Image (cartoon, rainbow, N blue to C red; front, top):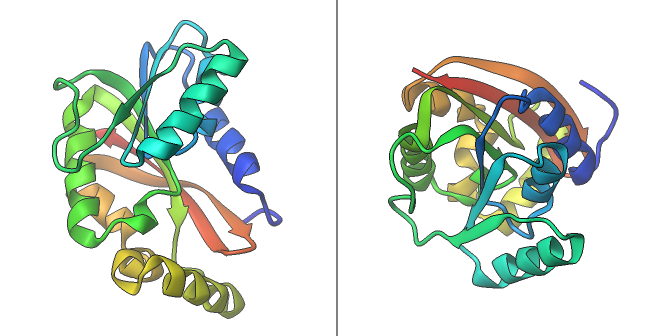
Length: 194
C-alpha cells in the first residue's frame, strides 16, 4: 500500500493500470463530474469515451468541463437497471468511487450490466473503498459509512467487493493496488469478462 493518495492521484494511477492503448470504446460508470472520463480522453484521443451517472446536475458539470477542455465525451444519464448501451459495446469499463454509494442489489445489477456491455475479453477496472487490515483506517471508514449509509457500504466494509465482481462473471479478478486515503483504504480491482 502506498502513502496516502488523493482522489485525482488514484484516478491517474487507475488510468495507467487500465492498459487503454488499444481500447476503442471506454465507459466510465458513475462518472460524476467527468474527471476520469476526461483523463481517459486526454490520454487516448481516438477512443470513444462515454460517461454514465444518475445525477443530472453532475453530468451538467461534466459537460461544462469537457467543453472547456475541448474534449468530446458522451455523457448519459443512468436511470438504474439496464444501461442505455447495446451488448458488447465497450473494450473497457472504469469505475471510481461509486460502488460504495450502491446497496448490494444495485451493485449486483451494475456489475451484470457492466459485463453485458463489455466485449468478450473486455476488462473492468474498479476503484472503491475496501476493508482495511488497519484498525485506524477501518474506524475512519466507519464515519464515512454513517454519511453514505451502512446498507450501501456493507459489502465494502466487509471486503466483499472482489467476491461480488467474481460472482458477476469476471475471471480472474485481481487486486491491482491498494491505496490509503484520508477516508479509509481503497482497492483497485481488475476483472476480465468471462
